[in-house]
Amino acid sequence: MSKSSEQIALARFDEEVEKHYRWNFTANLMEWTLFWMGMGFVSVNTVLPAFIRHFTSSNFLIGFVPCLNTLGWLLPQILVANFVQKLKRKKSMVIFAGFAEKIPWLFLFLAVMLFPPSSSFLFLISFFILYGMFSFSGGIGGSAWQDMVAKVTPLKKRGHLFGWRNFLGGGAGMLAAFLSIYLLKSFPFPRNFALCFLFAFGVISISYGFLLSVKEPVSPVRGEESSFKEYLLSLPSLLRGDKNFFSFLISNILFSFAGMATAFFAVYAMNKLTLPDSQIGVFTLLLLLGQSISSILWGYLGNKKGYKLVMELGTIATILAILLAILSSSVYLFYVVFFIFGMAFSAYLISFLGIVLEFSTPEIRPTYIALANTIRAPFVSLSPLLGGFLADKFSFPFVFVLTIFILMGGILYSVFLVQEPRHLPPYEFRRYLARKPT
Image 1 (cartoon, rainbow, N blue to C red):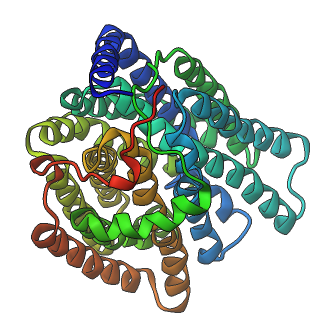
Image 2: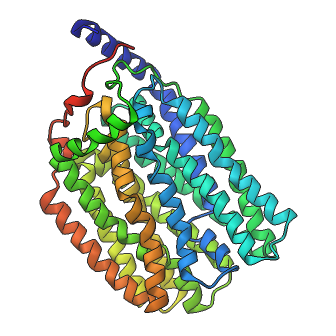
Image 3: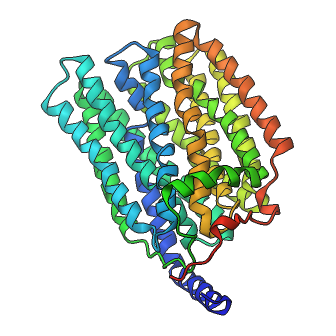
């Protein structure tokens, strides 16, 4: 494709993005809002650990729930990124993964209702298999979904979308939390959790309909064709060349250890204060309230100042939540813990989605997304397991204090060694810049 032809193709692409911007903004907003409403019924931080707690007292196994969630979302992305980069439209990949992502919740509902768990061991295996299917399906479609959102949303409007998405998603999640409180309190175990699984399936299915309606234009340029082996062998060169991105990955590895503490907030509170299952819904509600209220602020700040600052502030909020959890002696103080944690979670979610999209040129954006997610996958996924192991050996306060020191190291590394990518030209990896006609 000649330079002039390429410029014409890029201009047409920009026109199509602008033409469908409002439609796609609404579709992406509703898809995210309803997805997080569905997740409010099966929160990985509150509901699912409490559900597993009925089958085992092992903190290690309870920690395997968020471990599997993050491992499934992050690890597969580098394996499919090369394929995603070659797609003219990413939506086909997102639709495939989205279908596989919602089915496990229906199967979990049926498993609990039709085959009440008589063997804790067998049911735990079944649960983790189905939850693994949900998590890994999301990971397979993750880089394609993020790239699709970036394609249909101009850079200067992404913070607006991310902020409103989290705001409405948090509000919808709060509604789900209210309903989950009713379900968990009004029905006996395990029917109460089974109904949460059913509601999650129903709402996520509706969100899938909005995903289908996104109007994604054909990519005007694509990266160079390469085999999977060639692609993997080129990644070390990319990381050596883009030193700022590499430093960003190091800081994120340190931030990933937050899960050592945050994955156990609910279990720690339940055990320390001997609380009923219905309190899980209250914790979820407050977590989502903090997420929702702070989202517009984080989105605005990300648009104006960059997402690096938002990520650092979110980590400071996480440290504050951990400190308060150590000192909490009543359920009301734990309410504040979950509210602050919701703010921190929102900051990290918005900042990570936004900042990774600004490091590279569009042709290799799926690779940057996949690298950022996959490299931190072992640390994000294993940190809850490490936290559970250390809690079994020592205590939760020991784990919480250790987590604080690691996060403080991450903040210092980010402040002094990572530059805001918005203030730098996108790194161009020549290996992938040979333009291919569409």
